[in-house]
Image (cartoon, rainbow, N blue to C red):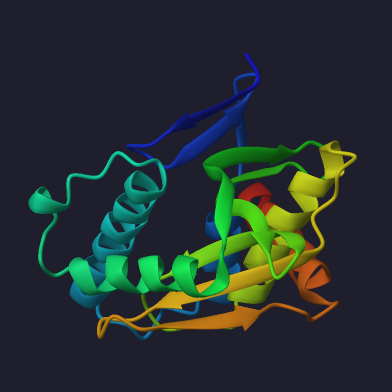
Length: 194
C-alpha cells in the first residue's frame, strides 16, 4: 500500500493510516492566515494551485500555453526566467514523500541542482511567510532520510504577478526543529480534540 494521497480532501495515508501533511501541520499550529479574509485566502490558494500546475506542466514539456489563463502568464514567465537565468533543471517535479520516523507527508515542488548544489525548491506565488523555512526543512529532511545522495540546500522561489521572481535561500538551522515543535503541538491537539 505505502503512501497514498487523496487530492480532493488533501489527505495523506500510509498503509491506510492517516498522516498529517507538512502544510496542515504548519497552518494548524502557526495560524498565520487567521487575519486573512476567507474569500481572499481561497483565491490565493486557487491561484497557487494553478501556478504550481502551470509550472509543473511547463517543466514536463506538456503545457499548451495557448490554453493558459492570462492571469497566470506573469507567474509562468517568472518561472521561465528563473530557470533561464540560473540554469536550474528539475530532476523531480511535484513528488510526494513520507518521513516514517517523524510520521508526516508532503509534496515538494522541485528537486534539482541550483548553483552547483542538489536542492529542494518550494515555489510561492504569494507573500513569503515565515513558515517557508520550516516547510522547506520538512521536505529536505524527509527526502534526505531515505536517500544516500543528500540534498545540500533549500530554496524558495517567489514568483510575482509582474513577471519577476525572487530567490530566497532557507538557511536557518532551527527550521526543522520549529517544524517538529509544530508537529508535536499538532499531534497533541488532534489527540485532545482541540
